[in-house]
Amino acid sequence: MISSVAKAPRFGSGRAGGKLVVDGRDETVFRKAQIAFKPAGARQKRSLLALLDATRDVYNAGLQERRDAYRHSSQTRIALFDQFNQIKDLRGARDDVLVWGISPLRWALRRLDEAFGGFFRRVVAGETPGYPRFKSFTRWDTIGYDETTGWRLHLDAPTRPGNKAAARTFRPHLYVQGIGSIPLSKSAIRQLKRYATRGGVPTTLTLTRINREGTAWRASIGFKNLAVETPRMAPTAGSVVGIDRGVAVLLATAAADSYTDDQGQLLHHTDDLMTNLAALGSQIEELQRQRSSRKKYGRAWRQLSRRIRRLHRRQSNIEENWARHTAKALVAQHEVLVLEDLNLQGMTRSVKGTIQEPGKNVAAKTGLNRALAEAAPGRLARWITVKAESAGLGHRVWLVNPAHTSQQCSACGVIDAASRVNRQTYYCGACGWYEHADTNAARNIRARGMAAEKAWAAAGSPPLTRPKPRLRRRNPLQTAEPAAA
Ligand SMILES: [Zn+2]
Image (cartoon, rainbow, N blue to C red; front, side, top):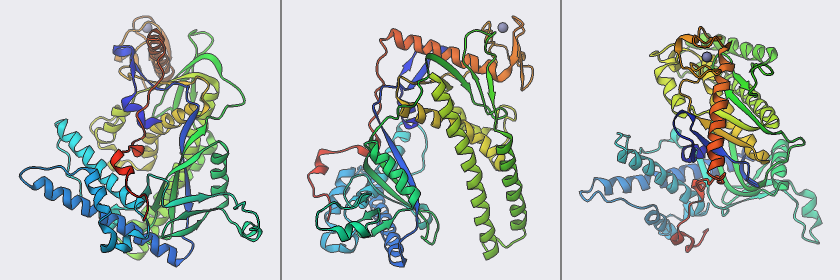
């Protein structure tokens, strides 16, 4: 998955270097199912909110303890497992917290540990990070389980003989200790069953509060051991595609060496999709105008904000769908997919402005359409990685050095910023080659990917080793203690 990008092995050097992020040898993958739910009743809602409060308490108490220790002259660091052991001391003293079991409390401490891990890592790297902060109600919205204790997914009716009545009234549900049975929607059941039939084993769970009132929630269930989906049609062996993800043109691809048989392809949104996005955009603007004359945080203001949020979500869903379908089509056609390694650039872009408008704070003033466009590259990269990984079949995904891909001539290799005449046209001053600037870039990306492939093959095509998922880190000390209250 894209989370392992930072640690991906490099092949090739200099400009031709690339990171391999998918090697197509996985037989199983890890996937999360996201489902929306509403608490079964007022009581369930209250206990969910109470659990959220309890885990926040644990987080803040753990933080307090570490702060005190850090301020102490010895600058002692308190390890995660010291704090885990203290959870046991809650018995007798805070039995109210233990009705939910130990797992969600541990999850909160693990999150604290990660916050400190990040903090110390950045200190060591010479940065000046902010010290981890106490969580207020609004900054703590998730209950989590890294282990399979304290919750269980019931998708099939119990098959115990003599229990026919129970089987008849059975409804698939998510059982959470101290919370009860959370009902699942039809579409959620469908998705979860699909994962289960692919051999998926539910391993992690998070419950996220969507609104302040606690009436809308999202559950995310992580499945391990999901078999890769074998597509109906395999892509052409050895087919390599270079993908340039732009702001103006969403996607340009180049899939062939020969300049005569493939001029590359530009993939835009369809007209329908553009119309929908534009319509939503103008609705949003209208509501924002209405909101500006209201009292901030007043009743009407909040109501309008809610409607605006909903429209934003619809727009982003449309984009997400487009990215998913485009990624799927690309993966179906090509064995090797090459993208630019835009991580860093993407991060700085929102602050420093785009290439076209350097120095302006884009995020602050441009509005949503720009924000959507800015998010598109990351979205596509994520989906291409996910789809290639799920398809197995020897698919490889490369992230290559993005330097000068738009200024280099794909025919003769000369780098000259002046050759990029305008947004659309690349006209090489050295050899006279011309084509659409974005497909020219896609061709360069493809060439870099092929160079990286070559270096990888020369190294004996080593399999990709992924870092272990961070949530499954285990300490032998910890398994010794009882799993649930
Ligand atoms: Zn040239």
